[in-house]
Length: 351
Image (cartoon, rainbow, N blue to C red):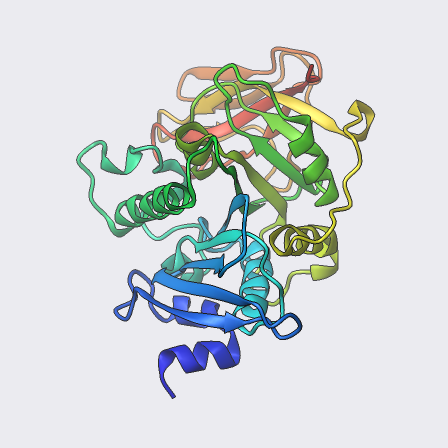
């Protein structure tokens, strides 16, 4: 049985990806799939390890959708969700209405159950992979993922002709007061889209963090360079493969399935009272090896502290709470020097 036949029979693109951590010697290759119920055809293109595109054949489309996962290898719930949708598409069980690119970001980190192998992949986009004279496989992978995004969007048509989307799916290192939340990348003066927040609510994500500066994350890359509606979406807490409670992700899984297959979405009009909206207040980077966080490892994201509370010390510097309701998010003292060790956020609203 050849590789294409095996993929069509099993739909198991995830195993193929994990067996080929950094490259897939057989790629690129493509094949057609017939949807079982409608007899319609889709073109499946495997471009690299963890990089697979689905395109309807002889059907008009208007959307270019990217669903990425495993930018951090130990964040397994999104990997399992995407692997299931990919399997259904390959086996012709799910109708394909739009162009869709799935990206399984860091297979090598997946295989060792860690966030990354040498360097945090989600700090390497927008060209950061080529800065500082450092060379490693994660930097090479970041460039390959950027190229996959660029080629996918550009081959679909212009931003004026197409609707472009990129949902970069993650899970957080620790638990959160709000179990699911999304980071909305900096928009450079463009308005926040309430229609996109309504879509996220249909995914059971109603806590939104507004970013007010450029970053080197994957979602910002797609938003800034290609005008995509893009988000970093955090779905619960890091768990090993097979240990996720997938009942917690029923709404996000079904909404994504409906989105790529053209089925009706359970979307209601944006109402401010349905959401928890935050904006970034402080970005605290680690500058010395003596950096410490002044709260326990099991403190949840979005826990707030009183004004004046010392959140972290970095050598002789104390980082204190400055505003009422200021809360912590993404604390991690084990980052490299110069990288973000903590964000603080405060409640806000959108126009």
